[in-house]
Image (tube, rainbow, N blue to C red):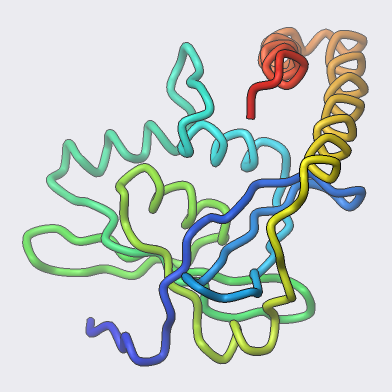
Length: 187
């Protein structure tokens, strides 16, 4: 399978944020004053945060397990492709290489990003998608970051209370640790 590099532009994870609509990963092309916002679930956001170096979990997450499986089979993730959006839903492909042969797998963008980060593989966005869906973006000032942190703390406190009430203690422990990290000023 050949990679049509001319159709894509490389991007990096610029930020992982929490808005009033949920968690969002922002992908940014080097030098651009725009970012591609992709809304993701809380577990996926926590996994991306871990891959970005914001702490680990005592047991492997699903993405860590998948990475270990690929490595044991002599395979690696070589790139993640954010390919299109339909009705507000983004689509991605994960490209895996083994013995010089590449295989493309259908993937959620959050999973493709997670795996690319774990393998230090590049993330690419379809150029047409970038032009259509990227939004203006400037670095947030510290007051915006403090508002995001406060909103994240509130949301995690609610989820922690719910997890304890429903006796989901493993999830509650993870949320408790995340809450402590945010309250002590961790990113």
